Image (cartoon, rainbow over all chains, first blue to last red; front, side, top):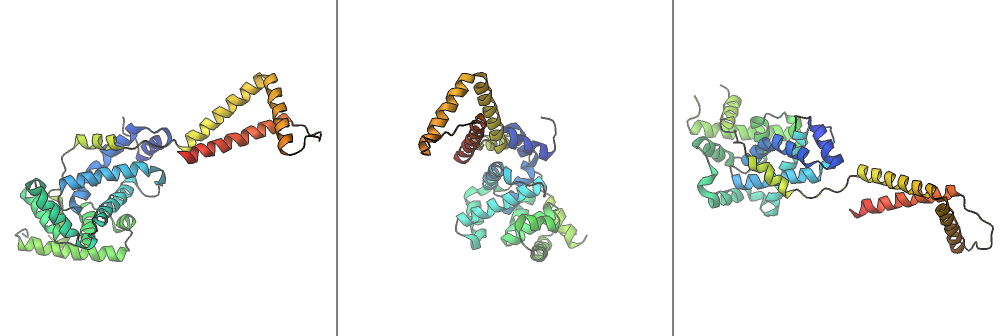
Length: 182
Length: 111
């Protein structure tokens, strides 16, 4: 299928039930969604893959509710964010998310990290609280502006800025302690 | 290099994800069946209604029978058997429209 704008693909899915059009959307956005969830789960590939699949299935079933006010990527990020927090809530351990992730990591063992840098990023991310991790990932890794993060998370912009600042200072401390600073 | 750049560079140093061809296949295999869109239902309603009217108009006898039957039923249900009420075909068309809209809504709410 030739490269069509998102809105044309979405219209084809909605009007004609064209699954190939949705497949094109999945192929286009799978990498950023998987990357976001991989970071939020501190490197758990299996879990982030499941959550990413869940994100696209929810997007498919809720496609009628997509309004062209925000771009499709932002809308998908919001679904991914909700899917991740729904998963955490479903484990009834919202306030102990790091423990959930640690538990999953122990279970998956070595498959979680591909390289030492990835392992370091995951280790550094585990130092952050879930909200800090989310805001740092979206702002510093995905380069999203604060107003987009407000749309995705529903947090006030001031709260997001303080999460980013706190997360950043924790990461800087980690980097300095581990010899990353030149 | 300031703190912001240091952190960004660190986080982006391993953000490349290898292409996963199987991912979209796994998603597509799990997609539920989509309900028929309201636009499609409206199109179906219009087509059904047009065909219905065409059949009725093509068979005037059938239209006459339908009118008579409708008159009788209406009179019966409304206790108007002894009044000289007559049903114009326009009411039959209106009834068809109402029936189509009602049926369309039933289909829409049932799926």
